Length: 120
Image 1 (cartoon, helix red, strand yellow):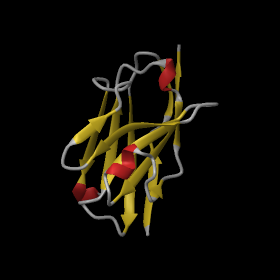
Image 2: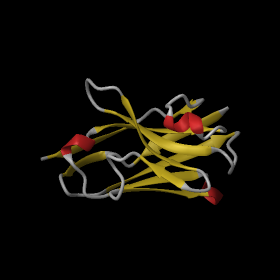
Image 3: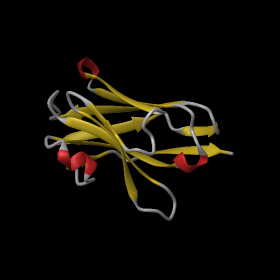
Image 4: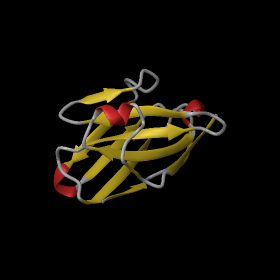
């Protein structure tokens, strides 16, 4: 089993920044793909970013968000800059041995989510 715990969410004004963290434990390996999925109120879940040996982003966040990984700490980060009100959502950390399952939001492992609210 893999456990994922997110932190770093909160309330920020438009144009501001936040950094989310996801601490992984259990049977997580450096070869596992990890990523972030978000869900805004009343909307479907949306892929945000993924990291394996490279990174991949949704068009809506490209150039504003950066995903990174500290393998020694089994931690993944999402640096979010130039935040917009439409970025308001619950952000979930996900992990999977198959990187394709990150973008298709069918990962085996999910965190509990952290709320990000961007005020206008």
